Image (cartoon, rainbow, N blue to C red; front, side):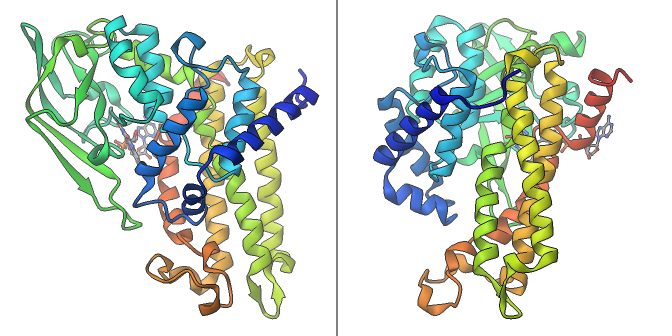
Length: 399
Ligand SMILES: Cc1cc2nc3c(=O)[nH]c(=O)nc-3n(C[C@H](O)[C@H](O)[C@H](O)COP(=O)(O)OP(=O)(O)OC[C@H]3O[C@@H](n4cnc5c(N)ncnc54)[C@H](O)[C@@H]3O)c2cc1C
């Protein structure tokens, strides 16, 4: 297995780096770098995706006939690495990494014609409606029901923790179409317009004071039967396909690498007891351990991407990356908050970003505590930590 980037990879990196520098609007990357993007995040993401679409780069992993780039897995890795390093908005992964691949693999031609282009150019944003109040890890217990009546499904029930539903256009939703049969054969996948009559969306206030997560209620919502993906009762098959399809997304490697750079900057900028924090042996020792872990994590991602590692069960590999990636997210944001000390309690979002008003450039302070608080959720979303470890025990260790 060759784990080195060769000359061609490096040339590719230079090509995408310089092109991103040309096409990424300065105001978008500036907001993103300063973590000021929360209020305009979706707007920026849509703008950036329209630009990437014009470039032919908005859905690199899709097959070429559906607008993909034809790049190798390693080239796609390099491209995303460069996007993060340039402070570009990240992929809106529910559309580009979930809905798109499911539709071009299992959906009808009409669904592909209707939905793929607005995902590619960022016009339509998707949310994921899997979890319910009594069905998270145990998704088989989901109860939202879709009853077929002629050419529509009538949907009743509710979803919870639906990220971004309040600003999304469509919901990729798991529903029960058969209340009698085995759980594995009774779940189907519906594409639901979030502006349909009968839908109520309530935002949930989070620990970091944002309200990105939502509850979604369905009260006799009429969904055209043509919005059923594939066959009735095969919702699990499609959900599992997603897991196998995007095995490295949950590693959060690009986000983590960018935060490592920012943490180093913080260490050089913060002065404590008359010296830069980076020269404090305890803080910089923690940073060094994290940097080594991140490098190992990156190699694990690359190993999973390498075709030669395909002997390892795919789901187990994805679980390793999820467990490690979520732990690193929490450690790195905790280190940032520790670097800021009592300053981390200040809300810089409300203040002017003027270096002259503060001895330390406030950019670096911006949103650090909020990020640290919200990364507590990293060991819950996308499959809770204990569930991932159970999977690992079963699939990788045969326990
Ligand atoms: C920030 C955030 C964003 C999210 N976004 C979405 C989204 O967009 N769409 C969506 O559908 N869902 C979303 N979720 C929901 C997420 O998928 C669930 O929270 C997750 O699957 C856990 O389910 P739960 O909350 O019901 O907890 P539970 O399943 O009740 O688990 C509670 C605890 O018990 C443990 N546990 C449960 N079963 C076992 C077991 N068999 N063995 C050992 N331990 C076990 C879990 O590991 C966890 O620690 C999001 C969650 C968060 C926090």
